[in-house]
Amino acid sequence: MRVTLQRVKQAAVSVEGEVVGAIGMGYLLLVGVTADDQPDDIDWLTQKLVNLRLFSDAEGVMNRSALDVGAEMLAVSQFTLYASVKKGNRPSWSRAAPPEVSRPLFDAFVRTLSERLGRPVPTGVFGADMQVSLQNDGPVTLWLDSRQRE
Image (cartoon, rainbow, N blue to C red; front, side, top):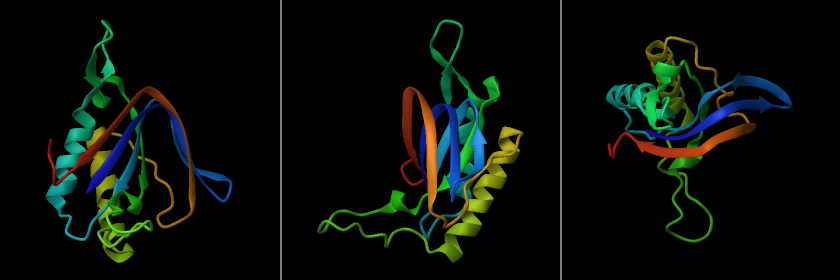
């Protein structure tokens, strides 16, 4: 499972011109699922996301977590995080899990993240053509992969 995290002042996701999920200060999470992801991938990622210290303390040092500052999180399913551009100019999506596999895992990720964060985590609409808007803060952008736990 992969997550691209962007620390934001605000973010929203819309489908057909209607906002379906929005947050203030926190993280926009673009979430990709591969067919061999397991519950331990969800556990590791959600634990890491709520505890990463990416918010500034009184001295301006990134030393506070989402839990410390009451940050919100917006999760958007994004199969393109598993694109391969190794061959040719058209990306291959073969490493991305098909919807019947990825949707239950994405839903479990959101449920677990909501529990750990102590608040609901809004999402986009799974499989829809979505428009995401954000005001990046920093900018701070990280890439996390549950198979490369760096």
